[in-house]
Each structure stands twice: as structure tokens, then as C-alpha cells.
Length: 442
Image 1 (cartoon, helix red, strand yellow):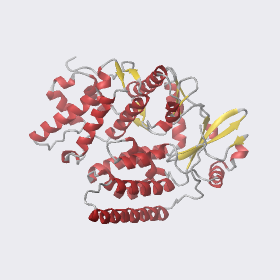
Image 2 (cartoon, one colour):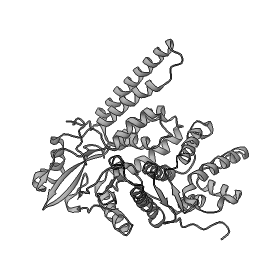
Image 3 (tube, one colour):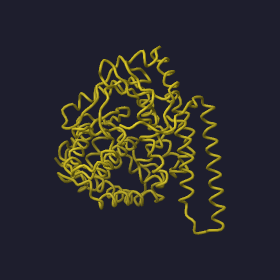
Image 4 (cartoon, rainbow, N blue to C red):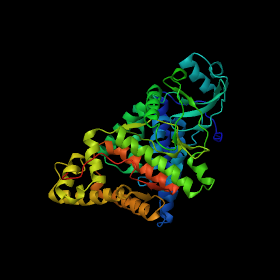
């Protein structure tokens, strides 16, 4: 794992006043970008928005990366959904998965003193004050204790306490970037807030990490670090250091198709075992949360974000992807109603429209589940999937909220999984862990 070479931050705004001032300043910059764009457009009417998007993405990312926390996490999430944002935002926000500016040494020492009453050098035999990775909520440092190499995850100061206020401040930017209706955006933000409150509780993360790594211990080619609750706190986690490469680094070594398939299979099994056997899933499938070990195994290094799937969501959702439910229009519409994809006040014409669109959408999404094996390197499938998503995102009928809140993280999880498998160009046996739902009429 390479050292983080981004410029270090010596301070982080923690109060509501400081953080809101940062957002206001960024808002002025974006306003200036729009003025510049429309001034140029007067002389060049054919000019598109690519330069405007590039300028806005740079200014928003710079601001969010200095604030860190939930605002930067939302940027990270949006970068994974390639249908929601212009490419300039996707490219810029992807940096938050690996390479946000790290905090300086004195701030790290201050965090240890606050939670342990000691400096890191008094707890570990060796502690590297320079971080190896810095992301949206915390950064990772390497340490040693009794000859064992450890990874120490340290949460940025103020992150856990500023979630609600940050999300209120990011709403105007989200409106502008996403074009969602207020109702849809509120549902999105509430669900994000709930998960982020959990994700910033490192004591909860340690408990879940131990539970999930034990539950998934028998999966082939999947490995987990050992966690040390006694050396962890509400804002610091100590775990074993997993040696390996992140996805980008791994792919740069030009691995064989056999090795790509092995990692892809491990990833598919890891996610589908959780969804169908545990009914709770690691809901943060960005490449920064995984390592490929030297012996070709998938290392899972972060269990901060877990989405529990209640039965009233699990059964109708996976019945749509895995059974003959689509053969009955009546039963399909019934499932769509349970999932609030079709709403009580919809007219017959709207019911027909949403029935047709959602059936097509889920039919596309479910393709990997329909056969026993699927080639995620197949470009045509992803072109069709993203092309359909892009078409839907521009339709006025989809400007209002559709679907229960559980879709936000379940869709994010599955599309994130598909994207990583596509980058791996992996061929995967998709019949290893099947949904526990019965076909209609059985």
C-alpha cells in the first residue's frame, strides 16, 4: 500500500458556524462559475457545460475534502452512481475513495490523547504518523505491537457530531447536481443520515466487523483482519494490517483471467451470502474497502456501513429478480405496490407506465441472476444498463420519489458490486447463494 502523498491538513472546521461558512464560500465560487459560463456563452452559443461542470466539481470537491465527514461521504456515494452525475463530478469525487487530504500529526496525537489519555507511541511499539490512506470519514496509519503489523483507523475530529448539520448544508448542492424533487431528496438524506450515524460509531463497527467476519469465515478466498476491541474506541479502530493491493493497483499488474475470476467469485459470494443468508449486507462496495492479497484472496477491510434488509422489503424485491413473478402482471403490480414503486393515487395510465418501466429495469438488473454463470466483462450489458438508467433519469415521471427507502442502499450495494465485477471483467458462477423466495404458484 503506497503512502498518501496528498497535502496534509493542519486543522479541520468542527463547529457549525465554521462548517456553514465553508459551504457559503463554496456557494459563492459556484455562483461565479455560472456567471463566467453564461458570459462565455454569449459569445459562443454552442458552448456546452463541460467546463462549468469541471470548475464546479473542482470547487465542491476541494471544499468537501477539507470539511471531510458526511459531506465528503455523500460525494463518494454519488461518484459510484455513474447515472446521477456528469462525468467531471464522478472523476473528481472518486478521489474521496482513496486519496482525500490527510490530517497532520499533531491532530492525530490530539485524537489519541482525547480517547486513550496517551499518545500513540505509548500504546504501540511503532506508529507511523503519516497516513497510508485518507478517505471521507477517517484515515489509516500503520503501527506495530509485539511484532504484529497493525492498521489504525482514526476518525476525523468533529465528523460524528456534524452529520445532521452537514447534510442540511449539502442539500442545495445536491439539488443543483441531482435535480431530485424535495421529497425524494429528503428520503435520500434521511436514509444516508441513519447509515452515517452508524458508520461514525467505531465501537459499533468493531462489533459488526467481528460478527460479520465470523459469519463469513467459511467463504472461499475471502479474508478479514482480526480486530482488537481493547485497542479501539468510539473514534479509533485497531485491526491487523492486511497486505495487498487495491483494485486499481491489482489491475495494473495485468492479472490473468483465472485470477480475475477468482477475485470476482469471492466478491459475488461475499455479497450474496450476506444478502440471502444474513439479510444484512456490507453496503459500501467501493474499491477502497477491499484489498487483493498476494495469494489471490479478497481482503475486506471495512464494515462501517451495514444495511439490514427487513422481510417486507427482501421478499417482494428478490421475488422480482429471482422467480417467475413477471409471468403474472397482477402479482408483479402487487409487488411494485408493496415496494412503493407504484403508489396508491396513481391513475390507470400511470400504473401501466410504471409497470412497463420497472419491469424492464428489473429485468435488466436481474440478468446475472437468471443464468448460472455471468460474464461481467460483457460491455453490451453495462451499456444497456447505464443507457436505460440515463434515459430514466431524464424522464419527468421519475422526478418524484418512487420506491421504499431501502432501495437507496440496496441498489447502491448491488450496482457497486456490478461495477467492481465489470472492472475485473470477471466470469462468475451466480448460482452459489440464491435468494430464499418461492416462485408464484408454488
